[in-house]
Image 1 (cartoon, helix red, strand yellow):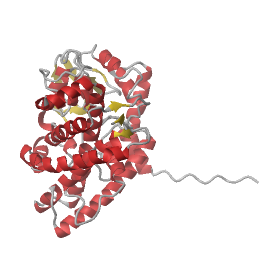
Image 2 (tube, rainbow, N blue to C red):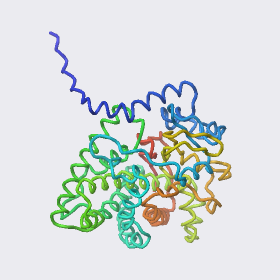
Image 3 (cartoon, one colour):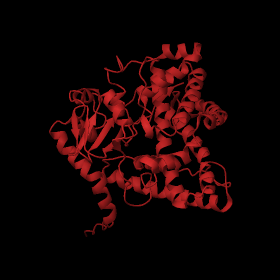
Image 4 (cartoon, helix red, strand yellow):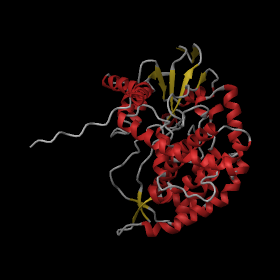
Length: 425
């Protein structure tokens, strides 16, 4: 006797439309262009090819200042000098806010604002990320790092292997960004699902998501939005500590507080997680450099800058021409979307000789934290976390050794990193 298969759940037409406009069209165009051999499109379809992205970047650099983008109407650059000029230019602006439910790209997210609106909103948030304020977080960061390092040996499996992502690099920035925001409020607890929701918020900043990944992202963002809505309501009723409470006291609306928190979790959690994990792996592969830094700790700030260049997880910055512009000999029509490939620019051999080699003290500044009006809001916080966490890790475990296994990359492409970094302590 045959059984009738269960009916498939109905497709949310509005959700499908959102995916098609923001992600599906780009993904379809990239697949077509990848078959034509366009390097930028190949990296959208397969973000981490077996050869690594280097050969594709080299092919893009054959075009100057821009190479063809992954879709019609898009351009990309892998040149350091071009990338830096685009990032500081007033002739290129941000893309408009995304339609749909509140998310990390909804207005007034910093990455959707330009001009006076951006300056105003950024000024409100900057108060929580000034070097002086961040210095005040250092003691808390040291305490969290010590607690996590104390627990690392117990987290190792029978052969002494521990995953630095889950045991170290993930919890540190998650705890600190929650503290900066003033979460959780009024004695509630951080939900166990927060890392998963944070990953979804980071995916919400991405482009070219598959339908399955898009649905997963929207579900995670909805759950995070629901929790943040409760937290903001509690802060509004009873006050609190941290950035959200200060913004609420200044008159920021409920929805704007939720969007601000969504953006800062999406932009400030997984980025630092991948920076710490990737940097730790790099140092484990370079035991002589790690030993030198243990012997000469004054070299750590320079080493962290080189690790940001080499291991910075933000792969690109997206801009749009505000009007027709002549740029380094190229005509860029109004509305053209330009992708600045940050990781490619940071490995441009014209700017960084022997770019795949760890060499602190390079002449040029990297672009890992951006440039211009939209440079990373949390740059001081990220640097502080790295300069606390990495020295403590290599000092506590001087024989840290990487464990070879197949690489599991995060499904996000804007913020890129390994989901596991197994090491022996």
